[in-house]
Image (cartoon, rainbow, N blue to C red):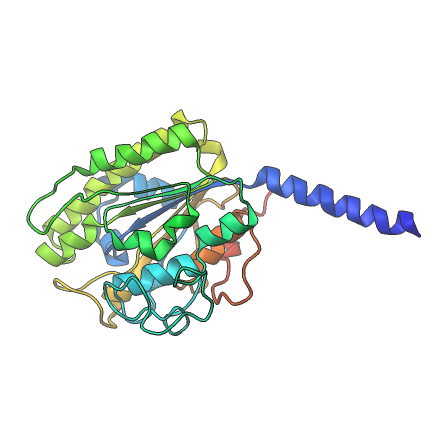
Length: 307
């Protein structure tokens, strides 16, 4: 009888060990204000890196924001797997919810993907680079090994060129090889607010960011992580005219691109994707147990079915 019980336990332990060994690094790239229409309207030759990741990964341009289409609300949903009414954030620039979250991580916000990673894999290395200071509060920076805010732009000028800003991230990636790293760009949203969504300056900014993604790709290759990383790239909202926060498709439809180890190539995701599915998908990729109170679900159709 003991042998009959022991054998399944050995098999289970072996399977878990194999899964842990095969868990990829995850690079989460978030571009504020990056609309699906911006990709649809672009010449693929102007955005070769975005195009490459889509052609060789899985993607949809129909991912939706939660309501309303404002930044704090949507980034919170993205990292904590919850809709607005459960995480409690309902203001544009809020760092705490108007009402308490349904589950508190002990620091006044819901447990995020970084909280869960620290709890379940305490030896995992995680970090975040952001140029909007609120991101540090939303993501639970105290659960990370590295977090840094860089004031990179104002509504009148760029203070730190995006190439230099990106270099901070690439240096960290090459030196630390994080299991989970969140790289946030706020400049696309700024281009929309100052110059208008989908105009010449907005599209030029998207082209500029595409070059920065090229820097990231080269850094992953130099670090020896290219074959062992999944890139998850998305946004909080789109925009219309010089604003967002409403309920139009232009404001609420955003790209969602997943590329890398074990991910299907040139695959259009044909199921609905909502903001809070982001955290669940990243958790699944990292081999984490998804909290039962999260409302997001992993988008498993992006996984390669071949052996």
